[in-house]
Image: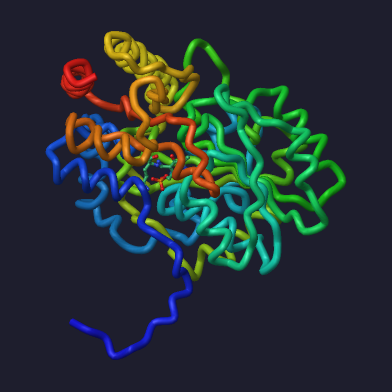
Length: 385
Ligand code: PMP
Ligand code: GLN
């Protein structure tokens, strides 16, 4: 069908997210898909049983705008027990349709036209389009290659009177790096006395390796007082397709967040909230996640040791970065496409997470997969490279 309308696009330069592009190409080519981040294994039946039970019990109408009280209570209890901060169930926690919506809503609630938002490159791909959609401007700080550590002096030099927000993400997608308690102190010092809001994307809060502790902004009293902290059940319970997450933050910030949330999604799928509230009662489910994924990380790294890729450290998330510059002259986009089409393993090129397309010849593998899937991928890589 053809439209008679001439569309003066609001976003003429905006393409399609790399995760969609690579997953589609993987499907087309029959490649092992280690590109987009999602598990290829099932969540526990107890979660599905609970959802089914709540549906049959008639819990199928609108949830309250902020989320089911049962789930808000479970979230607040979990955050208190992990990070020592007790948010108010009525005014300081909101259930969202995944972290992507939470991030977009937080940006829309706080960023005014002309405001600047500091983000760290490589930057998760939804942040900058959200900032630009509401008329803000992204300002880029760099995570230092190859350890991807923040440079707080650089951040300081980027702060202006227009800086409205700083977005942090730890454990970090795509690099698997972490920010530490020392980083939080430096960040606190930088924003002290300003009106800068921190948006902290902590969707991988339970996936840290080698005994590292997650430095949640919720657990840093000074920063928590100016932060919206985002998490997602998709990562924690192997249900990325359910699209349920949440935000916590001080009441005054949450009131602003809800102004946008109520007229955007209004409220989130009710029976899955009840199922999650029940499922969260067993803390071993989120506390065991780090060990579960550490085993996968180590398994995958052992397999990759028999290929010529050079692996970078992976301290958290379910992503492994690998350097290939000694194997090929291709750009990382070309290399990712070649690997998908010709070798049959789909990956994510890292240059897409840089505004200027900086290319360090690094690609990202997702290891949230069954051992057989990882083995099949490694076998193909071993034969081809
Ligand atoms: N932030 C980061 C860093 C992510 O990796 C993801 C998903 N992979 C999201 C946000 C979005 O999470 P959700 O699927 O809950 O929208
Ligand atoms: N965040 C996931 C990843 O990094 C993908 C989410 C998406 O497809 N938008 O792979």
